[in-house]
Amino acid sequence: MEAIQGFLTNLQPILSLLGIVIGAYLLLLWAASVLWSYRDIRSRSEDVSVQVLIVGLVLLLPFGGILLHMILRPTQTLAEKYERTLEEEYLRRDIEERYVCPECQRAIEPDFVMCPHCHSQLRRRCQSCDRVIDLTWSMCPYCGNDGSTAIRMGSAPLPAYRPATQPHRTEEITR
Ligand SMILES: [Zn+2]
Ligand SMILES: [Zn+2]
Image (cartoon, rainbow, N blue to C red; front, side):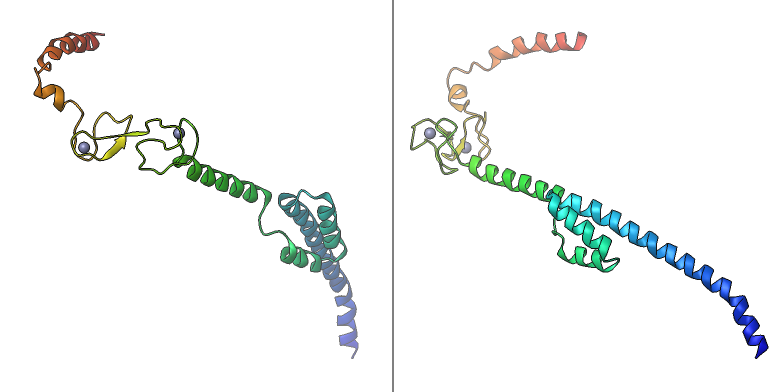
């Protein structure tokens, strides 16, 4: 009986020390949870009253408050929300601008040759295969026609270009 009593009195300081350590650990966890929820809610809401409410909740309800916060917090952070609106804006602009007349900005179909609103030329037909191609393309991507067949079939001015390009090329090499 005396041995047990002695053992218990010896155990007393160890138990109280353990209590202090556990208490300090819980206090640290609680403080960290308050700090974390403060940072978290600031990244998710610009509303100061919401920030105060959340931090107050986590402060007053240790460990329970942080759980509530994680359940109730906005799913998207402000950065994610901003990124998403940017993406949507780009997408919307892309769709809108893809089929718009460059002259009058009104909606057109992608295969229009002329704008039905302002009558400006949007694209041209290939002289060889008759497909609709871009005005800026120097050759037809469908049949390879570069628009010069009409000239080639005529008096053939092609050889006349050759001497002109040769000296220009050597000039570039020596430079
Ligand atoms: Zn137009
Ligand atoms: Zn063609």
